[in-house]
Image 1 (spheres, rainbow, N blue to C red):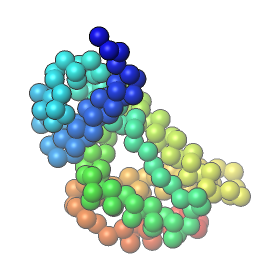
Image 2 (cartoon, rainbow, N blue to C red; image 1 turned 90 degrees about the vertical axis):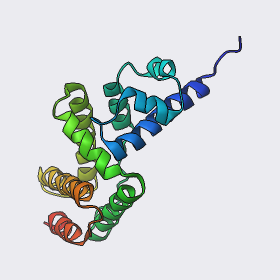
Image 3 (spheres, helix red, strand yellow; image 1 turned 30 degrees about the vertical axis):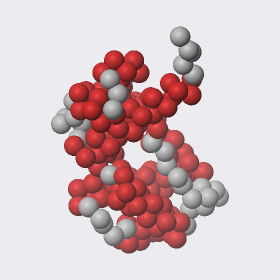
Image 4 (cartoon, helix red, strand yellow; image 1 turned 90 degrees about the horizontal axis):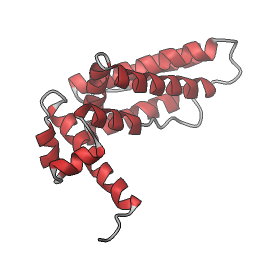
Length: 178
């Protein structure tokens, strides 16, 4: 019997994650069953369970793959570009709906909450690093507000659809320049 390569195993796992991401974005976690994920992925039930013991593990894997593309410097203009990136991801991939569901699930799942908390900590640290020369604690407070406002914008996209980032970008500019 030929040996299965790690690349093949990784591709299979990613196939499951991609199918789950699309299904969760369109139908939600609660209305997606493991049989739905089997159908969406095109794999067998056994293949899915080889990689993930539960739907919750798939949700955590999706969350762990989420990344934020921050600008090289933080200005009013780059903050608007960042929000435009968030808006485009919401339009193209349903990302805002997926993030809203991940946050809701994290409220009741300690394992997922730990992953989300770690990601938020990393994001706040990355934003604070883009604000050198601020008085002690100022960059951290600005980063906290920046992340909260961006998350609020993403929630608005999830619920309202395509939302103009202008007012959010203006608020971020005030926060950054404070």
